[in-house]
Amino acid sequence: MKPLSNARRAPVWLLLTVLCALTACATSSSTEQQPTGPRPAVTVLLRVRSPDGPQVELLASGVDQAAVDAATAAVAASVFPDAQPGAPQPTDTTVRHGAASAVPLTLPDQAMTVTVTRQQIDSAMSGMARAPKSVAVWVCSDGRRTIQVTTEAPGAVSSDVASGSCKIVGTSLTGDPVSWTATVAIGELEPPSLLPVAIVTSVVLVLIALAIAFLRGRAAARAGAATAAPSEAPVD
Image (cartoon, rainbow, N blue to C red; front, side, top):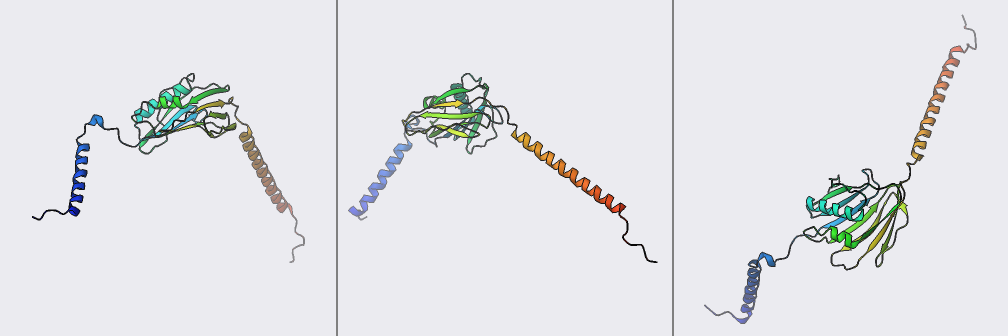
């Protein structure tokens, strides 16, 4: 057998080095390995008004239901400590490769203010196997309660008073050291608007008036046709 030339030895040594490295990684103990898998992305919705009542809803990808339930309950207890948070409940929202949960709240009708910080949210997510790669917190309302968010963070823009929409409270990214604090001003619960009732009532009255006018017109036309005399006498 002819000895390998220098040009052929280099690829062989490179292949042996790669094989040794792979073998060392495969034989390393499990305690030395870091957790693997995708980091979850979390969305927190602070619903101060919704068809299902006030609630904290949490959507997370890459997390099991138990972890999402625990995180939702932790957020509700931290942000609304006096709102008597209930037990986590399933929602109609479907999260691909993840889970969703909602915790009902009991909020007063009077105006109120709550404070939300990144530290609160990070603490609520601490029970997850892996820290979320991103967390976004929103506050949502409808036309009967106004919401205003004032955020203290670099580059943050506070929102104007608005109703019937969602406003961003704060966002966090893994490895981003920026801290934020948001003050959420929730307006007094307004009585139901009478405008929809007034519109429906007006439409019904107009339709009734048109129907009466149409029926009277037909009745008058029939009466006129029945009593009309011939203009000329018949010819024998």
